[in-house]
Structure formats: structure tokens, C-alpha cells
Image 1 (cartoon, rainbow, N blue to C red):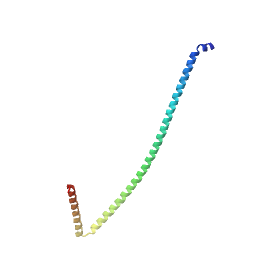
Image 2: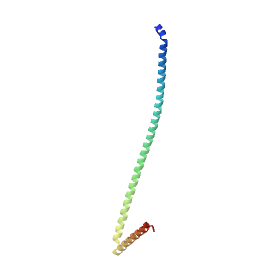
Image 3: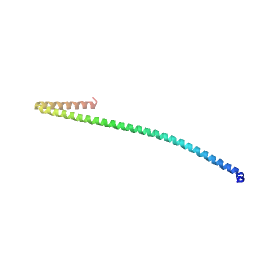
Amino acid sequence: MLQWLYDHKWQIVTVLLLVGVAAALWAWIEDRHSAELAVLRNELARNEQELQTASQQVEELRAQLGRKQEEISQLQRTNDRRIQEVTSNAYKQARALGDDDLLAAYNRLITGARQRNADRERTDSGD
């Protein structure tokens, strides 16, 4: 057995050297993959943090949108109520007017509309 080892010592050294080179190459590749994996994990963590931040901002904006929509709805209800009150008061006042007063108010309305139209026509024609 010792004689066989002595006769093949250079082949054994070559095989051991190749095994050592292969092990070193494998370790180098493993280190490189580990470094790439660490970079990807860091990027993933950063992306998850950005996603979480964006999700929080979306939720805040949705809540703000809900509040604004409620404010708009409240303003519309208030506006509708005021329009109804003004319309109701106008009808009451119109019914309380006599025929002569109603005719005079109608004539003032028509005269004002004609005057506004004439003003618009003068403005449109470039005078």
C-alpha cells in the first residue's frame, strides 16, 4: 500500500490540489452569492418599507377624502336648504304683491335683461 502511494504521489498531490482549488472556487462562489443575497434582502426590506409608507399615505388620503366628501355633502345640504328658503320667500313675496306691483317688477326684470343683452352685444362686437 505504501509502495502504491509512493508510486502515485504526484497524481495524489494533483488530485488534492484540484480538490483544494475546487473547494476554494466553491467558497468564493458561495461568498459572492451570499453578498448578492444580502444586497437583495436589503433592497427588499427597503421596498417593503417604502410600500408600507405609501400604504399609510394612501390610508391617510382616503380618510381625508372621506372628510372632504362629508364637508361637501354638508355644504350641499346647507345650500339646498337656503335655496329652498329663498325660493319660498320669493314666492311668498310675489304672491303678496298686487297686480300693478307684480307687473312693474316684471317690466324691470325684462328691461334689465334687455340692457344686459345689449351690453353683451356691444362688448362682443368690439366697441
